[in-house]
Length: 190
Image (cartoon, one colour):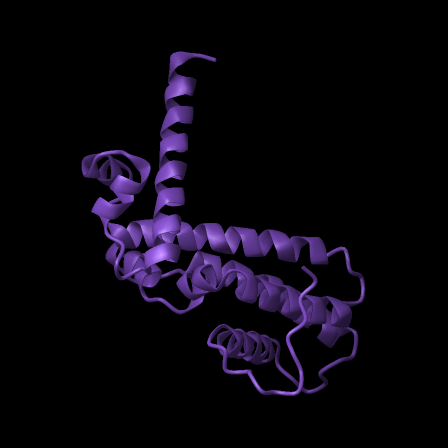
C-alpha cells in the first residue's frame, strides 16, 4: 500500500470515527444537546479536525442519515428474492417497522428531523436521493403487485406513497409509545 492509499484510508477511518462519536452522543444526549465540541471530546480530537471533515452539525446529521438509509436499503434488497410481490410488500413493511423500532433515534433522524434536509437546502440540492431511492424500491414492488392484478384502478405513485405514509405513521406511533393498550403488539423477528 502506497502513501496516498494509506492517507486516503486514514482519512476515511477518521471520518467514520467522527460519525461514530456523533451517533453515540446523539443517542446518549439527544441531537439538540450534542455540539461539535462534544463530538470532538467523544473521539479525543480537536474541534478543528471535525470541521476539516464536516462543514457543520447538519452535515454530520446528513451523513448519519445517509448511513441509516443505506442500512435500511440493504435490508430491503434481500427481500427482492421474494418472488410474490404481495408477500414482498408485506415484508417491506415489516422490515421497515422493525428497523424503526430497533433504531428509533436513527429513524427519527432519517425521516422526522429537519437537519438533513436543511443540509441539502444549504448546498442547494433539491433532490433527496436517500428518500427517493427508498421510495423507488417500494414503488417497484407496488408496480409488480399492480401488474399481478392487485390494487385494480389505482395509480402507482399515489398508492406507493400511501403505503409509505401508512407504515411511517405506524413507526411513529410505535416509537412514540402510542400503541400501548392496544390489543395487538408489533412483532419483530429479532
